[in-house]
Length: 217
Ligand SMILES: N[C@@H](CCC(=O)N[C@@H](CS)C(=O)NCC(=O)O)C(=O)O
Image (cartoon, rainbow, N blue to C red; front, side):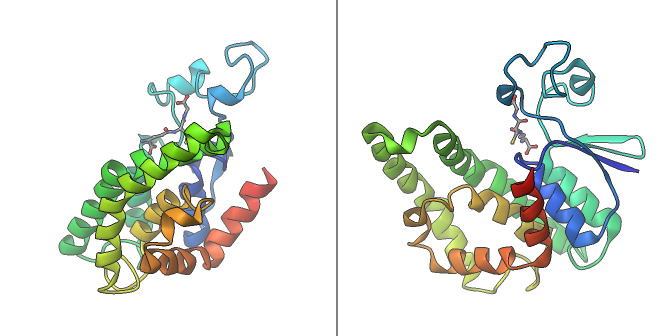
């Protein structure tokens, strides 16, 4: 049995999208981020990223994590590639060259893009972007996005999807990372291909099913 640790409103959303795409049965362990729990170590606190039983699964104290018939994995992007490869089909790499390209883009997502886009969601949550200082900082974030998103825009001139001219697990992963800035259209407007690609990815029934469950959480 596949157990997914993490709530929909976390990076676990990318795994919940993938299981919709693959039609996989799974058990959800709704581990909350500790910052969302008033007293995360209280005896009656809901299971969260500081709960000792969860720290035994991921000593980093972060979601998502999975337990797949005893194989415990952390790091959402690694889990996505693992599950896609395990269950096969066109979401997964079809040969070593495709796997190399997928790894390249997943690493790019984790290192060049997500550290910037995640800051935007944090500011959304804290209300920082409504302040004058926050508005200025957001402009700076737009400038930091120029290099990775221009490169991505250029890549998408070669096709509708990132690897292999079809929707794959890499599109799913990157779409979730780009989604973090979607509340701020001015950050994406300079990149029309990226915007159209994101729309294509989010038009999929798998995304819509995940999103409906996320909104209901
Ligand atoms: N690189 C990790 C990052 C995981 C991560 O930062 N998860 C956040 C939720 S989106 C978390 O668990 N935060 C809780 C905390 O830091 O206490 C991954 O992609 O899985």
